[in-house]
Length: 314
Length: 314
Image (cartoon, rainbow over all chains, first blue to last red; front, side):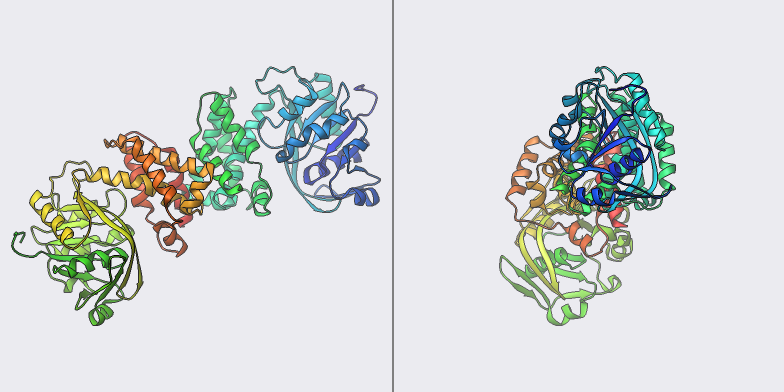
């Protein structure tokens, strides 16, 4: 199915703030995109998928929306755009869509969020992507894109890094599809490096935003909270190191400078917490913690953050 | 002034929930007790000091109450019953009361809360006491005693443990005065052991009650919060060890069993936080943390707790 002259067929599992945005862009570029939606299937079928973006508004119409994965065709690329808290559903959601050559692309936060997909699609068939996206779902079939949107994607090599890689030509084709759709995308050699680097921000700022009820600007302007955020970054760096990933000190400095310059920001974890939804504690904090411990390093403050978040989740 | 046949004169600096209770008992037993009060001096002069206790209600009347320390006579024993957050006032409060043989008895929570008094009264003139008391001030000159009340008291030997001890005969006399007043009091050889042992409860349960907005029962029934409380106890034990104080593992087990059996309890730190008062963060968390670091051990979770509490204090 992966031939250079035929367009690939994409499935988007979860057409929310993230899946709706990227799915909309991919469909607009002329790809054959099939959206698995939740509550707004009929609305999208009737009115299309609307994306209001800082780069220009558009509507994908007609849009191919489904409320049941069993109605969808098999696809070349299956994009996981659910929250990782729903990854226990992945077997049922992707099994019906798989062909021998399919690739699953997991666009979720956290560490080893690809492992559920690898267990179904098999080694050598999974990629992951770190998305830097600021978007919301503001109504049925209606996405608002506020800022950013770039993706660092790469092959997932399994929990021990020993899985075969996704064939390079396929990676390149997917990469090209994203670029053609206007999505700033980088194909990375070392997906785990990108994952850990993003965690260096997500662990302190998603975590503390809930554990200390503190948006980023409040953390950064309190001397002790700022130091705690830095301590958590350093522990994340050390955790990555224990797992064989070197992240330079200057990345921490840059991340602090970047956060200082941010507008006050409510993290996705804080939004989930305030709305009473399940938080992505395991993907963002629990799994990195366990990985570090597996390699003999105990990041104590990350562990305490994890303990506090689990208490607050209830 | 310390003779076996003359009654000693006591000053109580701060006649709140703790000072009012112990001061009331000491005065009732016939000792010459002078209370430094804040807002209710006139009320106490007019109506006496009322203590409603589970061991029987009583009124000390007339009671010797003062709004200004300069009006008070010099005393043999000066009991510090303020919150440690007010220890910057100690010089002004005790200097006028000191005689060459005076002893200052510091009945506060935390570590090295005696050092301010030692700086004024001099080495060999300071004792400390850990109080296990459940009482409230419920109105002007009116204390309600709900439970407990025993004290572990001993000589304070300075920040490095090298100060001369308070003369044993004086320690014994003060001890006897407390026993005669009906206060279950133990004279301890090693005050720092008692201090650290009490911190083993106060650090986790005062700290988490604010940092996680969690009364003791909520902490104990959440698996991750319970483990965090235990981790903080173990770090406190290790901090004490670094400072040369051995606390047996069984003390942790007993403390957990005791806490499991407690009724839901709002710690003093939580009450201060909810009322918008300054919390005893430095005495209970900051100073133990710095002491551990001074001896080369960094208790990471205690450090994180401290960082969070400082942020929440604002």
